[in-house]
Length: 109
Image 1 (tube, rainbow, N blue to C red):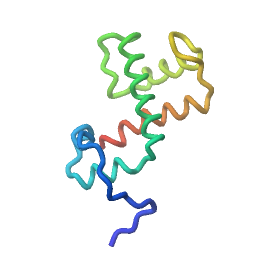
Image 2 (image 1 turned 90 degrees about the horizontal axis):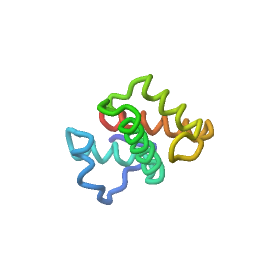
Image 3 (image 1 turned 45 degrees about the vertical axis):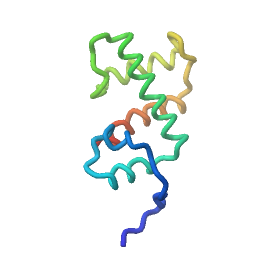
Image 4 (image 1 turned 90 degrees about the vertical axis):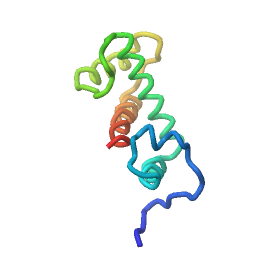
């Protein structure tokens, strides 16, 4: 029997998630989905969406994924300087956003 540090709830999760991450099975998708708390997943999704919008605006025609070091650094500098529509980030907030971008890849491995 496999014991997990965090139990996976038996309640349903969004059916679209398995297709989004191209999970090989329902059980795999459920495990990946519940590895993050809802608030954390929402924060990471916001980071991913803001990053995609930034790339579309400042690097038109460039796909946001895979994220390159250059694109991530440009996005980080943009947010630290509070250029554009968004408020200025502090280092800790930016670190959470970078972790959100990393989460994009973890969900899709």
